[in-house]
Length: 416
Ligand SMILES: [Zn+2]
Image (cartoon, rainbow, N blue to C red):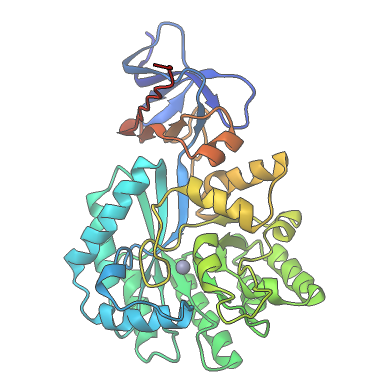
């Protein structure tokens, strides 16, 4: 007897393939469409482009949408952004965090995001409330979007007494990934110890690591090299992600090459956050001002896995953001000077296959046996998707339609 499908998608154009095809969903996984197969619902994609869900690999759901309830960041710097949050973080309540996170998750789902990795602050100011708030939101959205939580010691581990114990507790209470901010310590020795502590925790919980690394213009920052060395020393190759890595762009080329070789050897995933870093970095420069984003093209040339994140949505770091990977793709293409056809394809790989690799997602793809997550876009190809940032016509998670968007526009151009 022919298998019954829950959903059949006809005339889908999978990104990277040359022709359209039909795809079936059976028991939450993609399956080959067999003759005579029927489904509860059939969608005709009419040749539209499809990807296996956008992956948001770097966001701070605990901080989103606080910009209107704090004083303004007058200097526009990372340092002031962090200081302003101290005041707000003391007043955090678990339900209020979950509610703010939820509003941004709604937007993400509508934009085709099927997986999110979020950092949550873990420190002596907010304790574990950011984790508890985001974990509550994760529960509410279970089945609609998958969320990984990173325990993020933004205030440093050694310079913020009590944080190490809180990190261990966070990992026991719902965090999946060990975070870090090693540049935010008082000395290089403390930065190295910060990274070492993260590995101690990661080894105990068999967890991946995802750190904020050298989010500074300071060419003296050295924590990316330290992270690469400790990754190899701990045998954690392929399980470590470095976010931001802005200082890499400020290094002289010879030292930058040395560091990138070590990053490649450690198989570290790099996540650039162009929206936030274009806004924050280079603030104290006179002209010419640095662009603030890492060496994206040089990293890619070394076959280092690079993706990008939204990072911030209306917080003290960044006043905009609508959690749309296509908006960040457009920014990334500009900031990293990626304009050629193959470079535009590389940009489109970032919030899809590259981010999925960084998060080590199982079954990410549109082939039989893969998880039935798929986004159908009102676009013919990647360049068009980035250019127009069109509606995500259907967003499907675990084989279920979780969002549909249509936009109607009328032009009245007839002469009277
Ligand atoms: Zn971040």
